View 1 (cartoon, rainbow, N blue to C red):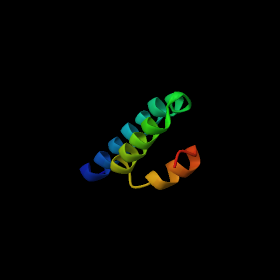
View 2 (cartoon, rainbow, N blue to C red; view 1 turned 180 degrees about the horizontal axis):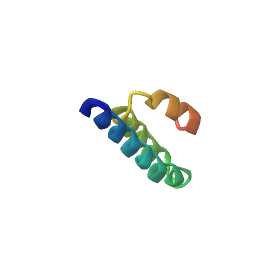
View 3 (spheres, helix red, strand yellow; view 1 turned 90 degrees about the vertical axis):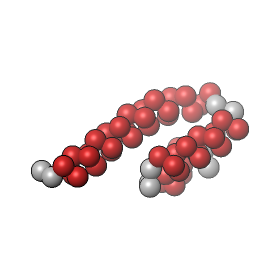
View 4 (cartoon, rainbow, N blue to C red; view 1 turned 180 degrees about the vertical axis):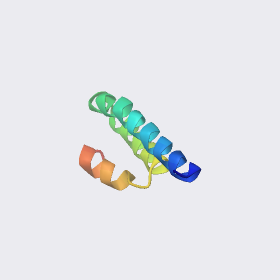
Length: 58
């Protein structure tokens, strides 16, 4: 495998781990914290809009 492929796999795994940490906290967040989270998700991943829709935070 190429090193670029390995980097992309590592990035995906790290994002998935971050999602696992964020999602349980979502129910306890107020609206301003959710807006901040939406901004972070948009910076973190190109598929942010799908996540925002699936998690019903946008």
